[in-house]
View 1: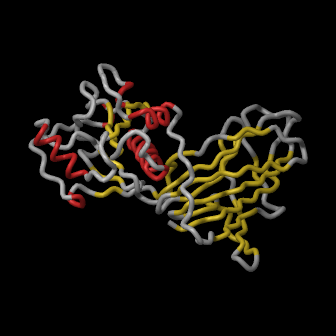
View 2: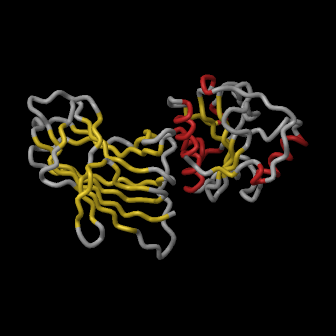
Length: 309
């Protein structure tokens, strides 16, 4: 869940009035830009919207600056004033700046808001941009953010601070720890040993292999037994976070990678990403087709370089 500066945190004025909706009415997530300098503040934008345009409040549901700081505007379920007649159906998020000013940090923050919105809605919301909505005649959000949104909101990895040293995190399985794959179902890989930095130690078999707020580079190696020649195997990372009432819940999943391993092949792939506070990374494997024999994960290893943020 992304960190959001509250309205009181940026000195927002009280709205003249509000209209609320619910998640069943939300179908899209719309990206805007303010078309001003990145030095603008949310309060300056609110003053313009209320005093010059006569609106009841700042028009956007959220705003994001170049540093990736997220500011609460009208919030998740208050109807905005950002793209009539789509304000009830779409959440409006504004990047503070002009075309070409959006940094990797800003795009990552917008992407994090989108993922959180989908989680709250319980379904995928459409990724949209202001000029792409019906009834709009505008250049907003500019060529850069429009192209980025059209391309699926992929985010660059924000480099760690100069001179920072990552922690090396290692989890793996022992030879006796075998996991059967159920055809057509994603299986969480569990790891039953952890390297402490000086030696391997056994632990209860659990799926988590990376924890807490961090930038990371995670390499996963797998070896499967019993797979048919030429059969497909899919692998992905999934984010989980604490659920109300205990346990964890799925938040989102990284892109799926597809492999066709031989009977003795090791599969290896590396993912880069940004993990939020309180969350963890798990490895998931899918065998799409029904095999002729039982397929098991004979070995698994997850090695991460983790930069604290």
